[in-house]
Length: 387
Image (cartoon, rainbow, N blue to C red; front, side, top):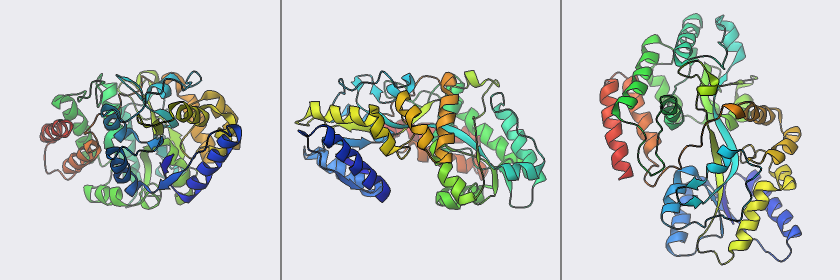
């Protein structure tokens, strides 16, 4: 069983293995782990030499590639009946279920209440605010705040891009592995970025690029320079600690001011997969089922890999969580009725897409190219990446 993560995760995962083995004394699990940087090179070598681990901690950006290559086992015997449907579907491709969500995230707007209060600008209701409301609110905050304080951090990356596309009836990817939008759709997104720039709702481009290269504890929200910022929900705890502020979770804006129509989605923080060449497919799936559905396993994991997808496990775990993780879990529960269909699994070749979006976003913020040019060039690069 292989995974990446911190020393805390290594110890916790070994505790999970020990618990599983105590309940299944006829099965022995050998763990191997490392950090993110070397994990994927090692896995690629193992798969190529037909020596992959039986159980693989998987990430969304690689899931489609390994599934398409036939490297992953279809997980027909893992019970997902107590998973939210969108969380259950996150690991499915057109050919079957090849990964089980280890934890759930959602895209959120985090707000710094002290900076919001100091600006004198009231935040709109997050269940009804629009993209225009967001820009106007952030611009007023910048205008009313001290130099170096901005209403919003950058609104960039594949998360916000995909949410924008979903709200406009498109998607980042299609289920058959293509792009789910065209140049004109991308131009709309980049035009919004230009609007944020011109309204001074976000920092100057030089600050945006500096923030992107900083560690999370040195970014603008963590250092109390951004009143609002876009993150994944599981990052709340680290950002509260770094900022010293009780940062609050808010829904992202929508096109028409309706949270029910905002096409919010659950993102798997990571997955569990199994090798298609495992000699122990029954045991491998039994272990994945244990990790996904066992309440005692959930009490060991807590929120280390994200909020549990199994509703019973989630209910049992929430009282044991740290305040930030509990707030995240409650937010996940709150938006459950608003969540749209699970996004298609990113296809093979999709790993450069997030970088392409961010790079052309920066070009627009530096005002080096028009939104239309950014859309055309970004679209061509993305098509080539998938090809």
